[in-house]
Figure 1: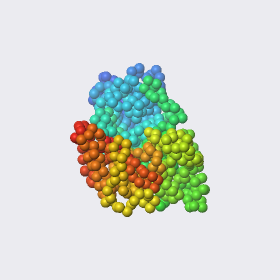
Figure 2: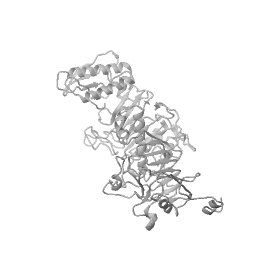
Figure 3: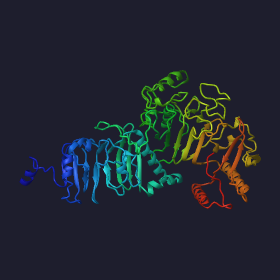
Length: 597
C-alpha cells in the first residue's frame, strides 16, 4: 500500500501505468502516447486511455512538440471517453498523424466524438487498398494499410464535414441491405463491397437527433463500427473548412446543390419529401422507400388524414416539417374555404436549405391527405425512387401527374417553343422533352396494387375482354401488335402516374418487378413468344412492339426486356436464364434485350 501511494496520488490510486491511463487530458495525451508506445515496451500488451477532457490530436495543435513522422502506435490502444457524454477528439482536418505500426497495433474508440474529419491524400491512397480516400468517414487520420481490421468504434460519433457524406453512407447501406435480401440488381452493384472490401454487415438507421443517422453495424476488412452516430453538428470542436486538394478532388461550385439521398418510411415522409424537392429542381434527389419494423411491404395507398407529427426526422436534411403542417401543433385548416390560408402557411417555411437552387414553377401546398384532395401531386422536378422490397400502390389511380413540357405552368405552348420535339418546352429545370433525365424514375424495386386506367374515358374497344386476340400492323423495322383492349386496361402501363403519352422519356423503370393480373401476364407472354418466333431464323434481335389505343391517341410501347413469371422463384430463374443467354448469344438462343417501358 505504501509503494502504491508513493507511485500514485494521495489516496494511493495509481493513475498511470504501462497498461492504463486513468486521467488523460489534452495537455498530457501526446506525451503519454509517445511514452507508452516506445520500443522498450511490449507490443502485445494492451493500453487503456481514459480521456477526462476533450482532446486535440493533430500536428496543427501540437506545434513543435508533434513528432515529424506522426504519433506511432505499436500496441492495442483503447481510448475511452466520459460515460455521461461523448468526449471530443479533434483531428484538425489533417490526415496520417496517428501511425499504426506492426502486427499488434490497433485502435479502439469507445464513447468518443471524432471531429474535423478530412479527405485522404496521396499518401493515404498508397495504403487504401480499394477503400475511398474521398470519404472522411474512413478516418484517414489513422494511417495503416487497409487490409485488416485495425480500427474499431463503439458508441462513438462521427462529425462529418457535409451532409452528402452521410447521404452516401445511407445509400450504400440500403444497397447492401437490398443485396442481402436477394435483389439481383443490388447483388451486382455491391459485388465490390463484398468481394474487395469484405463487407459482412452494413446497417444504418435514423437517429432521434435531427439530421443524424446511426451506423448500427459496419463490418468490413479494415474496421468495425457499432452504434455510432453520423452527424454534421459539432460536438465540442470548432468546425474547420474541409481542405481542397486539386490533384484528387473535383471542385463543386458553391451554387450547386449537392445530391441528396433520403430514406422515407411513411406516406407522410413521401409527401414531405416531394414538397421539399419542388424548392430545388436542379438537385439530384434519390428517395429510398423503406418499410418499418421489418415489414417487407411499404404502402402508398389512400390516407384520409396525414399526420406530420409522426415524422421523426427530416427526410431531406435541413428541410424540417413546416410550421402548421397537418397533425402538428397549430395545424392550419385544410378545407376548401381555408385552402388559400393553408397554402400560404404551409409554404412560408423560412431559411430553407434548398431555396437558392431554383424552385418549381408552381408551389404546391403540403397535402393533408394522400393522394392530395385537390388532385394528383404535380411532379415538376426530377426525382428517383429506388430499392424497396415491395411497394404497394393500393390500386390508386392518378396518384401523381407529370408536368407536361408542351404546356408549362403559367404559360401557353406553341409549336415553336413548346411542341413535342422542342427541348425548350418548360421554364422548370429538368423538363426536357426526349432528354436523358426522366422526370420520375423507379429503380430496383417491386410493385403491387397497380391500378387500371380510366376505362370509361378510353378510346379503345373494351367489350372484347382479355380473350381478344392481338392484331398486327406494319411498323418501322418489323411489325407491331395492336391491342384490341385500350391501354387503360393494362396495369403495367402505370396508371398511378398521369402523363401526356405523346411526351417521351418522362417516366422510367429500371430493373422493376410488377405484380399484374394473370390474364394480363398471359397476354404479354403470348406477345413476347410471338416476337421471338418472328425473329427466329433471322439475324434480327427480337423486339416486342405493341400499340395501345387511348382516348388521346395511340400509345406505342417497345419492350426490349420482358420476363413474365408466376412466382418469385420463377422470376429469379428467369433472370438467371437471361444472364446465361447474354453470355452465349447465338442465332438459335435469343431473348428480349434489357430496357424499360
